[in-house]
Length: 254
Image (cartoon, rainbow, N blue to C red; front, side, top):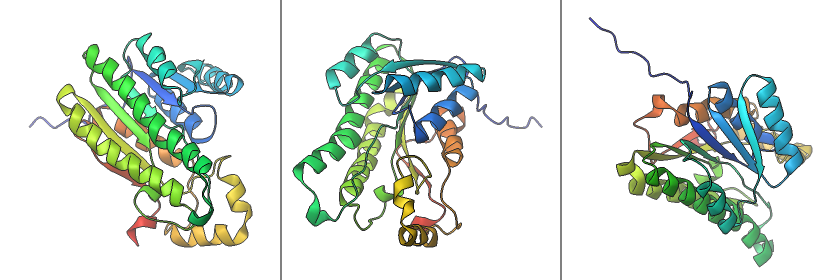
């Protein structure tokens, strides 16, 4: 008998684009792909941060370059992608949050969250996918969603709206792009300890409530998301598209 062979988790020879790569989860996602052999392009609005991350990845033996790019600038995104060979992997990670009661949300709040979490994510994916199709490159689009794209939460109306939109967007992408060999999926984490979430957990009552809802009893760490991204980026998920990989410690199972 010839036993089946486990598809490799290596990404050697593949190019990956990670947005919002200057801090927190973006750093971990870029590091995971680079450790698996991908050539990683890091983009964010802050030059110093992404260059520091790229330097550290190279120091660890990986391949990484950094470019300043505002992903909310659609024309700049299109030009950036058009100037480069097609990427095999996109990690649509740039995002923001403005927690508040729905009665307090202003149009400025709405525009800030929806423009980055939905509009920018859409047009980054569109530009990357169009380049992949043009150069006949199959690959994987990975959008960083949230458990809040599957449930509701107090003071999270804007964030939930954006992440539910991302889920629907990704499913429709999967249908449009399947014939080109391009997959589209989301990763939906619970609360991950990052610089963006740290201020929330200074509130003891909030922290206790979150830990009560995460059935495994701890906050997420960036390392918890690295394996999920590596799985969706490579051949081990070759038949996975149009779905969401929920990494929430059991929050949404209740």
